Image 1 (tube, rainbow, N blue to C red):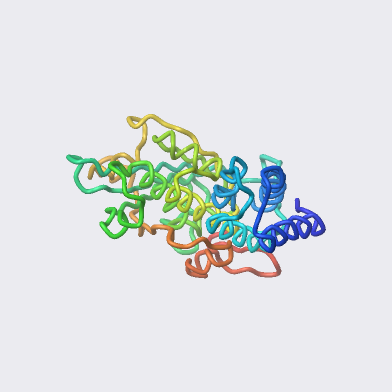
Image 2 (cartoon, rainbow, N blue to C red):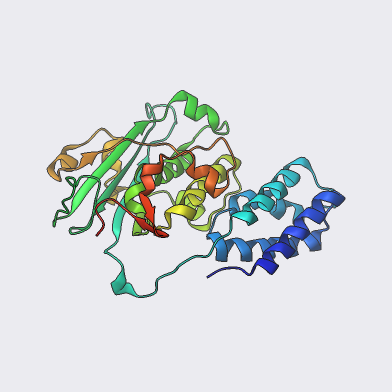
Length: 301
């Protein structure tokens, strides 16, 4: 699937015209929001929605003048439209491998909760490549991996000041799973369980009214433009979330499952980035080599 170039250029022209005039009426803003959502959704999924907050707010603005936040969003979206590419969507269930199960969790920053910790746990079905496979060998039984990290004061300082940061840390833990496992989640079906309803809703729809949450969500969706994982986000009770164990320093069950610990990579949330710029923060080997226009991942036939 792809968006015709003529349609994309028409939307880019609307954005450029608004920036040049320095104003955008409520009606034109509403129309532009719809056109941008159409182009981005068909071209790059949820990527870019997090940057549309200023546009949504401008729909209700009494004055048409473009303020700095809206101008920055328009400039970003103008660039994002140049990143659109054709998407391949497979509708034949038997042509894809069994889904990877993923759980993520984070503890909060309230007084008495101690140092906040973020973690994820992933289950790879047997017969498919996973990080714990010996080189050149694909094991036939399910494998488990996990990663966890303390949320440093420097990381907390990047978030908006508030009494409780658990929602933002839940989002960071969820996004970190993909930055940490991008090699093995590329072009795979993933069922991702999160025990925080706000985090599930935000990352699934690609948007949040909270600026720091929006930046984290954006980082994930920008990465997934290239990773092309088909992800279904689902809420799960905390008692049923296995990722709750490493955040509480409980590893007995993970040891029983012979889970392999891997490096926990926090996504870059300090910049609004295009898909290609986001990928520049990830080692090239993480995506495998490309031969003849097709991606070849480690362990694939």
